[in-house]
Length: 371
Ligand SMILES: Cc1cc2nc3c(=O)[nH]c(=O)nc-3n(C[C@H](O)[C@H](O)[C@H](O)COP(=O)(O)O)c2cc1C
Image (cartoon, rainbow, N blue to C red; front, side, top):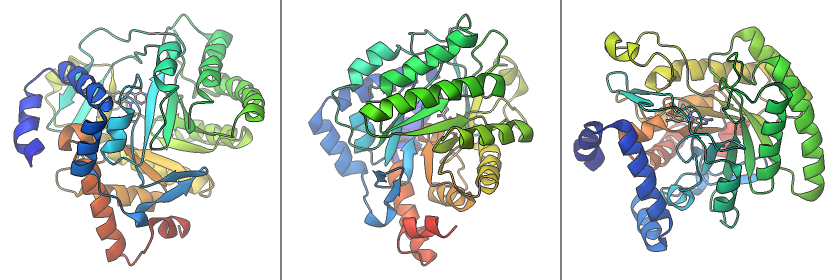
């Protein structure tokens, strides 16, 4: 109530980039204080044994995670764990530092309960983020989300090498690794979802993994997909994922679509490029989750991500439950935190317990196994 009635109106009156930067700054400061984290745990955490799930050999204490893009530079781990998330992704991290796009890069769409971002994959680069994370004992399973350096001059074979080096760097640190394949990052606007780029990349990745698995524990590698992929592109991608031993999917990234929005067209025209997240994204993510689950016969665990917590007419735990019914094993949020605040995590975990009881399910893992 405090966030909804007081903080959100205040924050929504300020420039979204300013708010984002200050949130990270405050979060980073809180992360360094064990007292602050203990306090946050007392206020925000709600732990329920029945929500625990084991995937890729990792123990998730609940199915809700923080999506990539919130903690791009690896500054917030302790605070995110203290808020009660079951896992998080750090990144996207690129091998080389990249400044991203000039302002403005964020546009709130309160009428649609969405957000458009065109941050442009800003990253402090692998070296700095690695040093920040290397001595941190992860308190919750932590995925490192990797992306090719967004410099369009890095193309072709160089692009593959850039991505592979980034992978090599973070493999020993990560609990799992997510490949962000869906951002346009070559001069022609091609993404790594293009089979022409993806197949040679996956070949190189397989060789690297074989080397690294000789030295470290095996780590799950996931592909993060765009919800805008057409059916035939999706099919070839799923085939490649199977051929090259990918362990699961994050579905998905933001959408380039702008259909059926209530936001004034003039506002949108000022922001023609950028990824849309939040409530308008949910229907695309749901369709894609269902499709991938059906087409792969449920063999790949899916992390669904799109719009959870943004719909004022739905309990956010109900939205998570819908994703789990469609085939997801875990669910992530980003934009929902902007609309509901950090209490969203507790709301979801408590709500999921109620839904399990109503459906006569004693443990979430039992339900996931029956689909
Ligand atoms: C400001 C912003 C930055 C993002 N940056 C990244 C990123 O660096 N890497 C990535 O894989 N996804 C990124 N995403 C996408 C989110 O991880 C997520 O897939 C998407 O926002 C959909 O979830 P949501 O509707 O809960 O926000 C970003 C999203 C937002 C809103």
